[in-house]
Length: 443
Image (cartoon, rainbow, N blue to C red; front, top):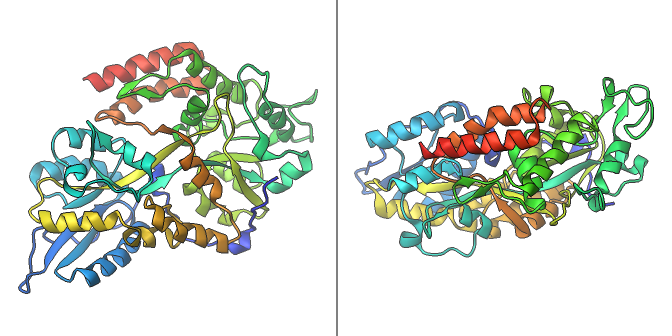
């Protein structure tokens, strides 16, 4: 069994789940004129993002930048997540958008296609110092359109006490829809316990009175089902088109749905469809043995009062295939401060520019030379984060892409909710969801 563990007393940091698409931020920051130049000839570049904790790190980064480039200052503006994506097209359309701004893989494509973004490939050239899989996410029509800032990959959090008691090594767990080489399901059955102490592997187990679950199978794209698809040789998308309705895709989803509704080793979708954080909370409370997730869940482990560790994500028939998601800084093609904006974008792709993002242990920089700041923080807390790095450097599957990815996701949602709840057969749900999603992105 892998041994990196940590108790509650040793961890306390600000929560910053920036790449997980669940962020919110508080009050907006400065709204300085993005085209301003003061009497001494200093150019002000504006930078917009949606997270205040990251904004504090960027202030530190930009102070260092201005120390080296005194003719350029950077004004950081925070727009809350709840308003961010509504404001973005409005401000681009009105010409009031910041010179540089955060985006994610689901939203950059439409702006790249519409000519709203700076072509990073043309203006800055290649940057071999960034995580290659993150760069690929922002590559469209053979050009790179963003400078990756943060990246997430997937690993398996485990409750060391529960797994030791059951005699299970989390690094050896493998799921297999054929059942032939499946070590995960037997372990999950042993790790699921009802109120009388019976496991899900025993006669008399009561699925209506579960005290301890094994795993967080649920309608969670990033941590669960896109990784299961990849690990079974299936696709989520083929280019911009949705392609999860395949024999391997059906196998992957049937396995997940059965974990919930047949084997009862995961919470019911009636609960997790409404509360996506339920499984994480159960793990932190010591009521779930295995929790597959990304770096964005590390800060929440501060409340765990048991020893926990990180193991490789579950292995599938095609190995371990992790989704890699990234938040990128993109340049406004209509910036009136183009030269200064390009210099700031260049800085944001350096280890020096990204190091403050990892220094508090809350976000994993996309610049490989800055990742040591994140690693060192967690090493000081007694946590080995190498499994996340291994996942990002191993086989990966892309996060959702395309100029209409949000429309596709919205079309998929109701079918997947019914499927995970066991009310819609998997084959039927996948066919309907894929048809609806591809129709939505074609509109």
